[in-house]
Image 1 (cartoon, rainbow, N blue to C red):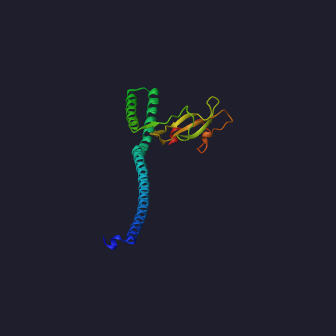
Image 2 (image 1 turned 90 degrees about the vertical axis):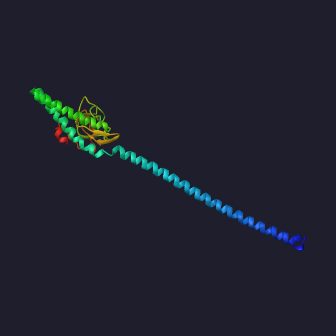
Image 3 (image 1 turned 30 degrees about the vertical axis):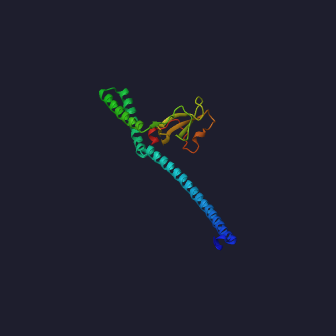
Length: 207
């Protein structure tokens, strides 16, 4: 054994160097661990944000699919209104002057109207309940209110134009007359709507 190998001082110096390297390695490990944790936290936040974005996009896509035909379906409603008016007029005329031609005309209008209504049903369009139901500003448009001693206040008493729902969304509000209750009471249903204290209203004016 040589003097260098047997020297206690040299051995102590080597041990001290190894201890310093270990401390540096531990410090670097702690630093890298913190960095890795920060990166992981950032990744988790980004993943959560992406999931939220994906859910929102899917919801918007579903909504778009459900209501993609909203505008064209709304454009069909006046055609249905006119067919219903034509049917009523033909039926009234047939009662006054019965003839074979009137019967054929009525059947033709009924068939056409039925086909239109089947198309609406196919696309999840359904009428809004009106007469006899409480006034609902979300689906009813009050064009008049009338005093009544027999009909409770705020009930719809007459429908001038049908309203329709597309799924759970109003496609068109129903135009109605609302009861104001007995004389002296004022219906809250007319607030913010056009008010007309008249019990007669021409259906043609509803357009």
